[in-house]
Structures are given as structure tokens and as C-alpha cells.
Image 1 (cartoon, rainbow, N blue to C red):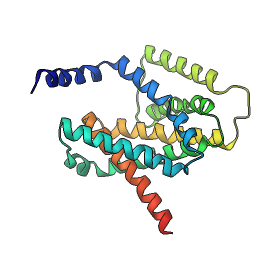
Image 2 (cartoon, rainbow, N blue to C red; image 1 turned 90 degrees about the vertical axis):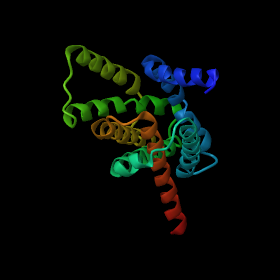
Image 3 (spheres, one colour; image 1 turned 60 degrees about the vertical axis):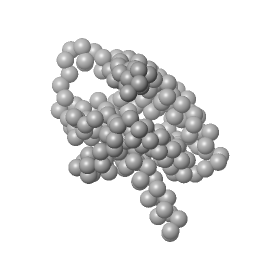
Length: 213
């Protein structure tokens, strides 16, 4: 292995272990989610748009994992129902998001999408039986107040686009709870790759069934 390859390999774990940097990068990328969805509305149906977006991402991640390591298909076989469950939830949630931006602007959609924090907190306390220490309770309360302030502004929010975004947030929070309940101990590359493959597979199958019918 060359010195350059060794440096890149050692830099990768350091990046993943830097939680604030990873969160910041995720926020930047995620903020473009509804913008891309809105730009695709005039050109493709929602399900087709998502298939292209996630299909390309799946190919890219597969190539990356194959080059850097190797693809562990045995992980997918052992956790088949886990990946199919979260794949279905993510596929449904993302399709709803892409359909919703035809009725609501990306900025409002992003704000309403933050309700996933509320649903996630509920799943954690009720289903996962999590217990919060004093500092965590304070943080949760502050997060809820922030969501209420930025999300529930005066306006016509009880419309189809807003309701779709909230439904999508519920499904995504459920997906996160399932991951936390059954996906612990799994390598990040294995989890992310097979999550993408399962999600894209549901899109492909659903569009194929529609075309056949």
C-alpha cells in the first residue's frame, strides 16, 4: 500500500469518529433534500425521481465499498427482515416527501420535517423504554420548544403537502427506532449499503408492478 493510500485509509476512520463534523456534513447534505425533490417535480413522477436518485447513490456506494473493502452479502442474508423493513419505511417516507413538494415549498417542508424529532422521542420513551437523565431531559425539552417555534408558525398548515411531510417524518422516525432496536453492532458500511439496496429494490419493484398493471 502506498503512503498516499495509507494516509487516506487512516483519515477515513478519523472523519467518521469526528461526530460534530459528521453531523455538520449531514445537515448540509440533508438541507438540499427537498430542493432536489422540488426541482425534479416538473420532469418526473415522485417514485421515478426517487428511483433515479437513490439508484445512482446505491451504485456509487456499492463501488466504494467494493473498492475499499468487500461486500458482505452474508450480513444481508442474516438480517433480511431487518433490511426489508427499514427499506420499505425509507422508500415510503422518501416517496411521500417527493410527492409533497408539489404542494408545499421546500423551506416549509424542511421545517415540518423536523417533527421527526418529536416522533423519535416518543418511540424512544414508549417503545424502546429509554430513560433520560436530567441533562438529556433538558435537551429534549429545548429541542421540542425549538421545533414548536420553527414549525408551527401562523399559516395554512393543514393542507395535503403539510400532512404528507408529517406522515413521512413519522415513518422515518419509526425507521430510526427499528434501527436502534435491531441494528446495533452492525458495521456502518454494511448497514448503509444494504439499507440503500433494500430501499432502491422496493422502488424498482413498485414501478415494475405499476408498469405491468
